[in-house]
Length: 267
Image (tube, rainbow, N blue to C red; front, side):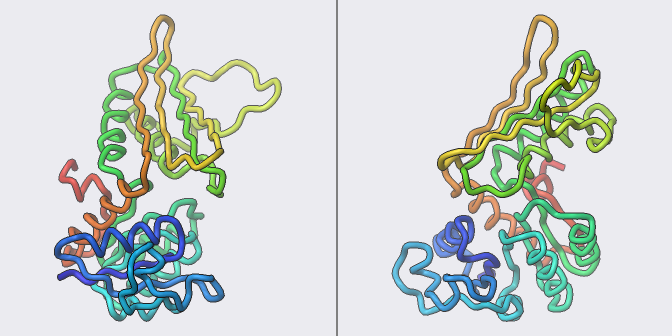
Protein backbone atom coordinates (compact mmCIF):
# COMPACT_ATOMS: atom_id res chain seq x y z
CA UNK A 1 0.00 0.00 0.00
CA UNK A 2 1.30 3.44 -0.97
CA UNK A 3 0.47 6.01 1.72
CA UNK A 4 -0.73 9.25 0.11
CA UNK A 5 -1.11 12.62 1.83
CA UNK A 6 -3.19 15.50 0.44
CA UNK A 7 -2.01 19.12 0.75
CA UNK A 8 -4.87 21.54 0.14
CA UNK A 9 -7.38 18.93 1.28
CA UNK A 10 -10.19 21.42 1.90
CA UNK A 11 -10.42 22.73 -1.67
CA UNK A 12 -12.52 21.37 -4.52
CA UNK A 13 -9.68 19.26 -5.87
CA UNK A 14 -8.50 18.28 -2.40
CA UNK A 15 -11.88 16.77 -1.51
CA UNK A 16 -12.06 14.96 -4.84
CA UNK A 17 -8.55 13.59 -4.27
CA UNK A 18 -9.50 12.26 -0.84
CA UNK A 19 -12.38 10.30 -2.37
CA UNK A 20 -10.15 9.03 -5.19
CA UNK A 21 -7.44 7.78 -2.81
CA UNK A 22 -10.04 6.01 -0.68
CA UNK A 23 -11.42 4.29 -3.79
CA UNK A 24 -8.07 3.27 -5.31
CA UNK A 25 -6.60 -0.20 -4.83
CA UNK A 26 -3.03 -0.08 -3.58
CA UNK A 27 -3.46 3.39 -2.04
CA UNK A 28 -3.99 4.39 1.59
CA UNK A 29 -4.87 7.86 2.84
CA UNK A 30 -2.10 9.10 5.15
CA UNK A 31 -3.65 12.46 6.03
CA UNK A 32 -4.60 15.89 4.77
CA UNK A 33 -3.41 19.42 5.47
CA UNK A 34 -4.86 22.89 4.98
CA UNK A 35 -3.62 26.37 5.83
CA UNK A 36 -4.04 27.49 9.47
CA UNK A 37 -7.48 28.96 10.10
CA UNK A 38 -9.13 27.18 7.17
CA UNK A 39 -12.57 25.76 7.96
CA UNK A 40 -11.41 22.28 6.94
CA UNK A 41 -8.81 22.04 9.72
CA UNK A 42 -9.98 19.61 12.40
CA UNK A 43 -12.67 18.06 10.21
CA UNK A 44 -12.72 14.38 9.35
CA UNK A 45 -11.29 13.75 5.86
CA UNK A 46 -14.02 11.28 4.98
CA UNK A 47 -16.68 13.86 5.77
CA UNK A 48 -14.82 16.48 3.70
CA UNK A 49 -15.09 14.11 0.74
CA UNK A 50 -18.80 13.54 1.34
CA UNK A 51 -18.32 10.10 2.87
CA UNK A 52 -18.57 8.50 6.28
CA UNK A 53 -16.06 9.41 8.97
CA UNK A 54 -12.71 7.61 8.62
CA UNK A 55 -11.09 8.82 11.83
CA UNK A 56 -8.43 11.02 10.19
CA UNK A 57 -8.71 14.77 10.68
CA UNK A 58 -7.27 17.57 8.56
CA UNK A 59 -4.27 19.28 10.14
CA UNK A 60 -2.78 22.75 9.70
CA UNK A 61 0.86 21.63 9.54
CA UNK A 62 1.90 19.99 6.27
CA UNK A 63 5.01 18.57 7.93
CA UNK A 64 2.72 16.09 9.72
CA UNK A 65 1.45 14.55 6.48
CA UNK A 66 4.93 14.45 4.95
CA UNK A 67 6.09 12.47 7.97
CA UNK A 68 3.20 9.99 7.60
CA UNK A 69 3.05 9.62 3.81
CA UNK A 70 5.12 7.99 1.09
CA UNK A 71 4.01 10.67 -1.37
CA UNK A 72 2.06 13.92 -1.07
CA UNK A 73 -0.32 15.29 -3.71
CA UNK A 74 -0.44 19.10 -3.61
CA UNK A 75 -3.23 21.17 -5.16
CA UNK A 76 -2.95 24.27 -2.97
CA UNK A 77 -1.40 27.68 -3.71
CA UNK A 78 1.93 28.56 -5.34
CA UNK A 79 3.52 29.82 -2.11
CA UNK A 80 2.28 26.82 -0.09
CA UNK A 81 3.42 24.35 -2.76
CA UNK A 82 6.90 25.89 -2.87
CA UNK A 83 7.14 25.57 0.93
CA UNK A 84 5.88 21.99 0.71
CA UNK A 85 8.55 21.18 -1.88
CA UNK A 86 11.13 22.07 0.75
CA UNK A 87 9.35 19.75 3.20
CA UNK A 88 9.48 16.98 0.61
CA UNK A 89 13.19 17.59 0.14
CA UNK A 90 13.89 17.48 3.89
CA UNK A 91 11.70 14.43 4.55
CA UNK A 92 12.84 12.49 1.48
CA UNK A 93 9.23 12.00 0.28
CA UNK A 94 7.91 12.04 -3.28
CA UNK A 95 5.48 14.74 -4.39
CA UNK A 96 2.83 15.25 -7.07
CA UNK A 97 2.14 18.91 -7.88
CA UNK A 98 -1.05 20.16 -9.52
CA UNK A 99 -0.81 23.80 -8.43
CA UNK A 100 -0.26 26.38 -11.19
CA UNK A 101 0.67 30.08 -11.35
CA UNK A 102 4.20 29.86 -9.90
CA UNK A 103 6.62 32.77 -10.04
CA UNK A 104 10.32 32.26 -10.78
CA UNK A 105 11.27 31.90 -7.09
CA UNK A 106 8.59 29.27 -6.43
CA UNK A 107 9.48 27.33 -9.58
CA UNK A 108 13.13 27.31 -8.55
CA UNK A 109 12.23 25.85 -5.13
CA UNK A 110 10.44 22.96 -6.85
CA UNK A 111 13.25 22.36 -9.34
CA UNK A 112 15.85 22.30 -6.57
CA UNK A 113 13.78 19.88 -4.46
CA UNK A 114 13.41 17.59 -7.49
CA UNK A 115 17.18 17.13 -7.49
CA UNK A 116 16.76 15.33 -4.15
CA UNK A 117 13.33 13.61 -4.36
CA UNK A 118 11.12 12.44 -7.23
CA UNK A 119 8.35 14.85 -8.21
CA UNK A 120 5.64 14.98 -10.84
CA UNK A 121 4.48 18.42 -11.93
CA UNK A 122 1.71 18.96 -14.48
CA UNK A 123 -0.68 21.76 -15.31
CA UNK A 124 -3.37 19.16 -15.92
CA UNK A 125 -3.56 15.52 -14.81
CA UNK A 126 -6.22 14.46 -17.28
CA UNK A 127 -5.05 11.67 -19.57
CA UNK A 128 -6.94 13.35 -22.42
CA UNK A 129 -5.12 16.66 -21.92
CA UNK A 130 -1.77 14.87 -21.80
CA UNK A 131 -2.55 13.36 -25.21
CA UNK A 132 -3.78 16.77 -26.42
CA UNK A 133 -0.46 18.39 -25.52
CA UNK A 134 1.36 15.83 -27.62
CA UNK A 135 -0.98 16.33 -30.59
CA UNK A 136 -0.71 20.13 -30.45
CA UNK A 137 3.08 19.99 -30.48
CA UNK A 138 3.06 17.62 -33.47
CA UNK A 139 0.53 19.78 -35.32
CA UNK A 140 2.63 22.89 -34.75
CA UNK A 141 5.61 21.16 -36.37
CA UNK A 142 3.57 20.46 -39.50
CA UNK A 143 1.48 23.64 -39.77
CA UNK A 144 3.74 26.59 -40.63
CA UNK A 145 3.33 30.10 -39.15
CA UNK A 146 0.76 30.99 -41.80
CA UNK A 147 -1.55 29.11 -39.41
CA UNK A 148 -2.32 31.52 -36.56
CA UNK A 149 -2.46 29.85 -33.14
CA UNK A 150 -5.07 30.81 -30.55
CA UNK A 151 -5.64 29.10 -27.20
CA UNK A 152 -9.09 29.54 -25.65
CA UNK A 153 -10.00 28.35 -22.16
CA UNK A 154 -13.00 28.61 -19.86
CA UNK A 155 -13.25 27.83 -16.14
CA UNK A 156 -15.61 28.36 -13.23
CA UNK A 157 -16.11 31.79 -11.71
CA UNK A 158 -13.88 31.03 -8.70
CA UNK A 159 -10.63 30.38 -10.61
CA UNK A 160 -8.09 33.03 -9.66
CA UNK A 161 -5.36 32.73 -12.33
CA UNK A 162 -5.59 33.44 -16.05
CA UNK A 163 -4.70 32.12 -18.53
CA UNK A 164 -5.02 28.71 -16.90
CA UNK A 165 -1.94 26.58 -16.36
CA UNK A 166 -3.29 24.12 -18.91
CA UNK A 167 -3.78 26.87 -21.50
CA UNK A 168 -0.19 28.00 -20.99
CA UNK A 169 1.01 24.40 -21.30
CA UNK A 170 -0.88 24.06 -24.59
CA UNK A 171 0.62 27.32 -25.84
CA UNK A 172 4.06 26.10 -24.82
CA UNK A 173 3.47 22.85 -26.72
CA UNK A 174 2.64 24.83 -29.86
CA UNK A 175 5.69 27.06 -29.39
CA UNK A 176 7.94 24.03 -28.87
CA UNK A 177 6.60 22.49 -32.06
CA UNK A 178 7.66 25.61 -33.91
CA UNK A 179 11.02 25.90 -32.19
CA UNK A 180 10.02 29.10 -30.41
CA UNK A 181 10.03 30.30 -26.81
CA UNK A 182 6.46 30.92 -25.68
CA UNK A 183 7.31 34.05 -23.68
CA UNK A 184 8.68 35.66 -26.86
CA UNK A 185 5.59 35.04 -29.01
CA UNK A 186 2.59 35.07 -26.66
CA UNK A 187 -0.18 37.66 -26.47
CA UNK A 188 -2.20 37.22 -23.30
CA UNK A 189 -4.59 40.16 -23.64
CA UNK A 190 -6.07 42.31 -26.39
CA UNK A 191 -7.96 45.53 -25.71
CA UNK A 192 -8.60 48.54 -27.91
CA UNK A 193 -6.74 49.29 -31.13
CA UNK A 194 -4.06 46.62 -30.88
CA UNK A 195 -3.20 46.49 -34.58
CA UNK A 196 -3.00 43.52 -36.91
CA UNK A 197 -1.96 40.14 -35.64
CA UNK A 198 1.79 39.41 -35.73
CA UNK A 199 2.95 36.40 -37.76
CA UNK A 200 3.93 33.56 -35.40
CA UNK A 201 2.03 35.03 -32.46
CA UNK A 202 0.31 32.65 -30.01
CA UNK A 203 -2.77 34.27 -28.52
CA UNK A 204 -4.74 33.46 -25.39
CA UNK A 205 -8.33 34.11 -24.38
CA UNK A 206 -9.61 33.32 -20.87
CA UNK A 207 -13.32 33.01 -20.08
CA UNK A 208 -14.78 32.70 -16.58
CA UNK A 209 -18.27 31.78 -15.46
CA UNK A 210 -20.60 29.32 -13.78
CA UNK A 211 -19.27 25.98 -12.63
CA UNK A 212 -17.23 25.04 -15.72
CA UNK A 213 -14.61 22.49 -14.66
CA UNK A 214 -12.29 23.19 -17.57
CA UNK A 215 -12.65 23.66 -21.34
CA UNK A 216 -9.63 24.15 -23.61
CA UNK A 217 -9.29 24.65 -27.36
CA UNK A 218 -6.25 25.21 -29.55
CA UNK A 219 -7.07 26.72 -32.94
CA UNK A 220 -4.74 26.73 -35.94
CA UNK A 221 -6.37 29.23 -38.33
CA UNK A 222 -5.14 29.85 -41.89
CA UNK A 223 -6.68 31.31 -45.02
CA UNK A 224 -9.31 28.83 -46.13
CA UNK A 225 -9.27 26.41 -43.19
CA UNK A 226 -9.04 25.91 -39.44
CA UNK A 227 -7.73 22.97 -37.44
CA UNK A 228 -9.10 22.78 -33.90
CA UNK A 229 -8.14 20.60 -30.93
CA UNK A 230 -10.66 20.61 -28.07
CA UNK A 231 -10.83 19.06 -24.62
CA UNK A 232 -13.71 19.49 -22.19
CA UNK A 233 -13.72 18.20 -18.62
CA UNK A 234 -17.12 17.72 -16.98
CA UNK A 235 -15.83 16.30 -13.68
CA UNK A 236 -12.80 16.93 -11.48
CA UNK A 237 -12.53 13.18 -11.15
CA UNK A 238 -10.53 13.04 -14.39
CA UNK A 239 -7.86 15.15 -12.69
CA UNK A 240 -7.91 13.23 -9.41
CA UNK A 241 -7.61 9.88 -11.18
CA UNK A 242 -4.55 11.09 -13.06
CA UNK A 243 -2.96 12.63 -9.95
CA UNK A 244 -3.41 9.45 -7.88
CA UNK A 245 -2.04 7.41 -10.78
CA UNK A 246 0.98 9.72 -10.82
CA UNK A 247 1.44 9.34 -7.05
CA UNK A 248 1.48 5.55 -7.27
CA UNK A 249 3.87 5.71 -10.24
CA UNK A 250 6.41 8.21 -8.86
CA UNK A 251 6.91 6.56 -5.46
CA UNK A 252 10.33 4.93 -5.43
CA UNK A 253 11.48 6.56 -8.68
CA UNK A 254 14.89 8.30 -8.91
CA UNK A 255 14.99 11.99 -7.99
CA UNK A 256 13.87 14.08 -10.95
CA UNK A 257 11.09 16.42 -12.07
CA UNK A 258 8.70 14.23 -14.08
CA UNK A 259 5.61 15.07 -16.15
CA UNK A 260 2.39 13.23 -16.96
CA UNK A 261 4.01 12.31 -20.26
CA UNK A 262 6.49 10.27 -18.22
CA UNK A 263 3.74 8.74 -16.09
CA UNK A 264 1.84 7.57 -19.18
CA UNK A 265 5.00 6.38 -20.96
CA UNK A 266 4.59 8.83 -23.84
CA UNK A 267 8.03 10.42 -23.54
